[in-house]
Length: 302
Image 1 (cartoon, rainbow, N blue to C red):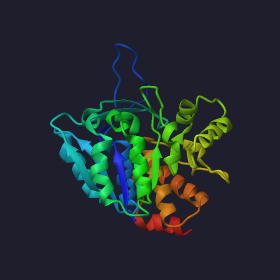
Image 2: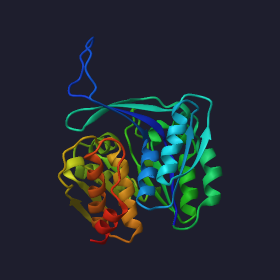
Image 3: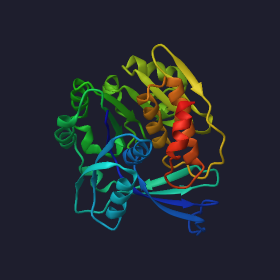
Image 4: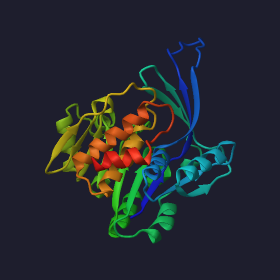
């Protein structure tokens, strides 16, 4: 079984701050880290570190960050198929507060050039029954929207599973319900669930997603753990208690860990528990982090 990650890659600039600066003020940054970033790239990094055979499909620019991004992927064991563009890469600047939470600003760069047609030509001939295709950063990649639903149908016709992380739609459109029935694993957090469904009640929001054809919904709740919903079951798992240093990328690593446990034949409850553990280990550290293979194998076995 192979995992294909489709979507965004960027250079993350992580800045730890003790307090926000007001207009006209200047405040000190206490920790500055450059890291591989992007929902799909972070997922691919974590999936490879977890021992999965993963390949990333994306678009990359041509500047000082290009070599760093490629080296980060290769070092993690990620194969990559990225369309080069003669422009500046995508960047995300994350201001990380004392509690580990963040606010972010980003540029899209070559991601704006990545289309469903290009993905279809590269991906479909390589798919085999049982492969998993993960989509991340969908709302950041506007060209991907054209022909996306037909692309999902063609992937499903190959006997593959589709995982989709919702992410945040800065454009405010949140248009995925038309193809929700094609998605086997739909990942999101509480804010994204509310924005997508326009429901204030979690119960009503989940009910609407099922009505639109969703099958398995995984709701990430940060320090409060995570929840799984299907047509026949729902349950919650608590997250381990850790001192939060940096939440950037924790949701992406959660996604990879959940699918790793699923591939290993674990039930949904065990998948949640394993994903909570791996994501919490990352939250306790700055930058991307996945525990050692020895610890991961022990946790999965238990």
